[in-house]
Length: 403
Ligand code: TTP
Ligand code: MG
Image (cartoon, rainbow, N blue to C red; front, side):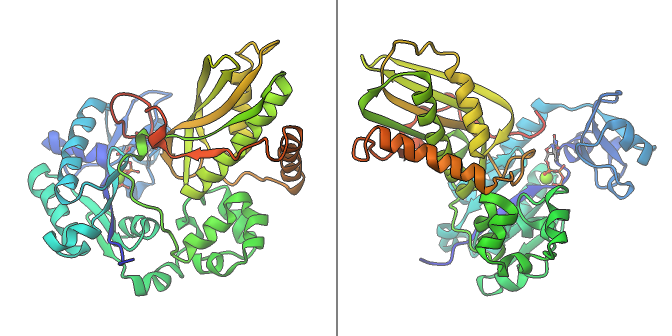
């Protein structure tokens, strides 16, 4: 396979920069975008405000204590959506393979575009200069052979930065970086890792899968591979509209709440594995049941936070099962699917501690299901790529944080 050229492009202080561009009186000044009230939260701080420590997701009152001179402007989401569309239109000039992660950020696979527009670095330069010239905004970009490295690179010289990493330099580039640069390692997980002697990505790259799984649960192996720069995830332009599901038709119809629940657990585990492998999490969990007479029933729930672990998916699925009257009914198919996919691990239960006992219970339950319905009777559940699944909505929706 030829070396891929992946770009990660991220606008600088996006909402604040749009406000400063639209209102010249805000230029060069510390600006906080958000509600100026007790319960208001900062969505973003302009670069002039950042040295004070004011930053995204901080209560507005706290940010104003740190940066008393800041000008607070309200969020104008419709405006940012409009500008975002202009930014994405520029991305699409250079490749159809654009995967939006939020309003101001996307991965672009420009491997095949290089014969037309020059190498990855030339394309990143062209995109940044189009954005500057036409939209009067700045973007930072990373260029690398894979998504993980491109994303880290784009963040290194913000604002208005461009960092390119060639394939032969990937390991050297990643090695000295602090573990906090690892996808999903935040304020909760970092101290835990540091206590165990992991300080740099190189430490993670060298650790055994066993050690990583003991520390990080099911994300361990994935984290180790990323730390070595091994990341073959594709840039997937349709990802935002997709779902990950598992379903199963049984040779003998199922009946009874508990047996159905067990199948949902098996599906949930398969989905969790897939989400982890893809490095994504999901906001929506849906169940699907097909009665013996082929009638379909489905129930779905939108969760307050994205999840990616078996227990959370199963809990949501079970909750949906309670909404279906299963007494005296027989079912030929059960399924679970996760939609509303967002990039990255869940924000709250990062690296859930899945101890061995829990895992064993799960495996035992899965084995019970197989026993009960016969090793041959239980055909392998298929993990559906989204193409077979109904779309979330008629229109493609990019995920937006903070909404
Ligand atoms: P980011 O790209 O994370 O931040 P940014 O563009 O403001 O700053 P930079 O990339 O230069 O570090 O997020 C993009 C926009 O998303 C941001 O302008 C506001 C919004 N946002 C929220 O609403 N809530 C949040 O917690 C974060 C982090 C961002
Ligand atoms: Mg940004």
